[in-house]
Image 1 (tube, protein in one colour):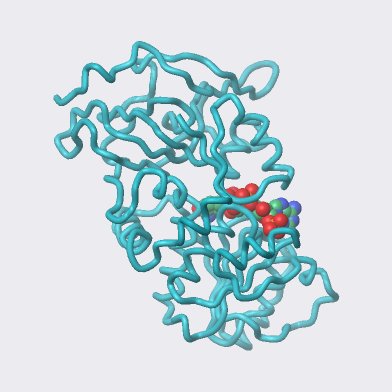
Image 2 (spheres, helix red, strand yellow):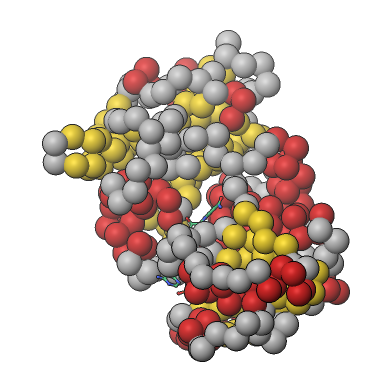
Length: 336
Ligand SMILES: NC(=O)c1ccc[n+]([C@@H]2O[C@H](COP(=O)([O-])OP(=O)(O)OC[C@H]3O[C@@H](n4cnc5c(N)ncnc54)[C@H](OP(=O)(O)O)[C@@H]3O)[C@@H](O)[C@H]2O)c1
């Protein structure tokens, strides 16, 4: 059983989410490692990415956490301080995401995280801790969509990829990753002030997201070979109507809502495919997609850097509220 004794804390800061008579509340607390949910690997967190879903969890705006109290945070990057599983050694940099981390297991919003060894991945080659944290769940999700497009036979030569909600974390990561992989990216955003940033990340075209609200036609001009939709609602319906023959639309998010009005015409006239992407992927997909993200899909961290905001744990609740109100842009990491 390997342990870096000097690094074992007696207690550490966390943001813990409770459910009680006054509803769901999250508060800063100190916890001992023994109080964390079970697992073979104790990790000293360095960064925890803040996802839309995490914001819903800690503010109690959706029932995501399965049992309370719970430390939310669906992803974290840090180094092993103790492992009773021989696959991991003290000092080893690792990433944990998905597998119900922050939902059924304590998650990233704490200085320490304990995880089952089956949930822990060594840091992918080609990425340091900060870079892996910047990519995190949003970049991995964009990578999964790209992986699915390629499995469907699309290539960068097939045409442009639309990315909706482009100024958000998935949107910016998708723009940077797809452009690095050689694809032309058309970024849809409600925020014209983010146009230059999106161009710097590799978008070749910026579209005002209001385009989706024009009176709908049965089929729009076939503009895109593929689309990554973070928004849902009218945006998803418009993307389906605007995808060219044989193209693909990946549903990733629902920032504007869960339902959409659609017709079968894009499917039966253009043979398009619509599928969902769930970041909680099985290991072969994780290994393949992270392998690309550290090499041929590795985004420009120089371009991403200005859009990565690092906050302290105590700033997280206010940040979460602003993010759900659509007041933030880019990627946010809690730094420990
Ligand atoms: N399937 C998965 O496994 C998976 C993984 C990660 C994330 N997601 C989901 O993907 C979505 C995006 O995640 P994120 O981390 O990028 O969130 P985010 O950083 O909060 O960005 C969401 C973006 O969506 C747009 N948006 C927000 N509210 C909107 C509204 N009411 N109408 C139209 N557009 C709106 C905004 O972009 P503009 O202002 O630029 O238009 C915003 O920046 C979320 O729904 C999240 O839950 C799913």
